[in-house]
Length: 244
Ligand SMILES: [Zn+2]
Image (cartoon, rainbow, N blue to C red; front, side, top):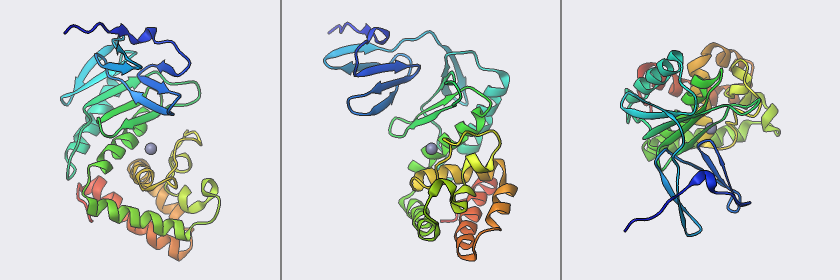
């Protein structure tokens, strides 16, 4: 049966909004990532997402972008894909979607089940891609490793102070406190074990010295937990080995 699909750009109602690769569903508070060529059913109608797009293939992964990618961006993607591929349980996304940055904020998003990663262009492109790839990686780890990370997360909650955004315990593994030119909204390791893992790996990959300097100023009990996490993270990043 031939099903007529309307162009999703024509979807125009108060419950849905298309923003680049992101389809916001205000009714349910969801954001969906759409890949070019994808069809979605919304309230009984079929819509086709078929934007004018630049397409690439990096390490076998389809990459779509609204603006042409620079050589530097392609190099960053290729380098990070190789890194993730050589980790234990190496994983790559099914598709990488690259949007244009919103004003003042560069956003990243991962659809774990569909293995879609979305990153916006801008000065922090590589670090945001790295953070998102770690979300994907964490999801596909063994439950033993996930449990270990979750245990460290709860141990940190036990030794932190009240206000998470200002707490030096969480700041030591938060991109917005460790890396340069990062907006406050970016790192939120205190949110859950998933976010802690993604932020921890990103700060250790891009400024391990700063992390260790910040950790050295904490109470001994707080240091002890963070040192376990640092050893775990650095072993994964620099030796491609999982300790737990
Ligand atoms: Zn995140």
